[in-house]
Amino acid sequence: HGWQWLFLLEGIPSVMIGLAVLFYLPDYPKDATWLSVEQRGWLVTRMQREEDLRRSHHNADHLAAMMQWRVWLLIAIYFTVAVGANAGGAYFPKLIKDEFQGLSTFQIGLLSALPHICAVLGMTLWGISSDRNNERRWHLAIAAVVGAAGWALTALTESPVLSLVGLCLAQTGMMSMLPVFWTLPTAFLTGAAAAGGIALINSVANIGGFFGATILGTFGLWSMAACLFAGAILAMAGGGMNSAHEQETDT
Image (cartoon, rainbow, N blue to C red; front, side, top):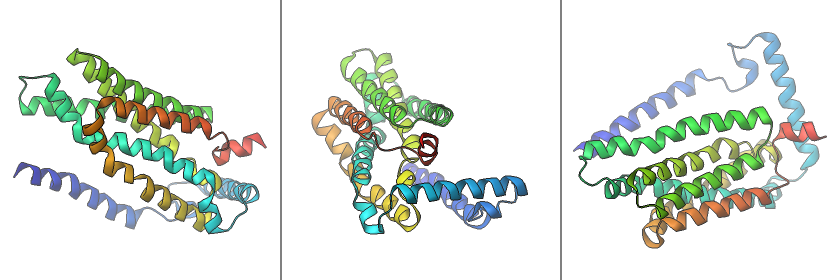
């Protein structure tokens, strides 16, 4: 069946790349052969300085580190992304088909790819902007607002074209949150606490993905807009969350 081939075509490259990374990606910067000796030395020194900074600012045992409010705030923010992203993945083709009646399945598939293409471009540029400006909180909140605005536009408009534009904005906003979001856990977690904290954020927040399609199917498009707007508010509430580099700059 076609859907079975789709799973194979999507899964096999991921497995192959995973194996390649396992064997060819070095575990530590000091082992990166594509960097010069000077570059490796600078990077190791810089990472150690950031590690020391985190330890001095957040000196707690592993369990206490994972129980701190910042971790659970990040869980709440990521929950909103997981809800929207899962719902989008499940419903984009149906939403587009409802708006563009008369198109073939192949044409619907092509249009369904547009939000994801926009998201790839948007999240790349947004991540670059966040790094260049050395800023996280506003970038995270603005991306969430863009996602919420996209869902709201899709809910409001009766134009198929504007509806598709709304879906592109929604997906771009949601995906642009991710590269900014994942700089934050290691800003205040280090070592084993970082590994445990990131795993906790992933496992608990991804419960939102389980409910995403159900929430959209039950409460409609406005529920997605509300969820992401809540994510923006939560991002702005996290004033104490900065990247390690920002903390170093501020001190």
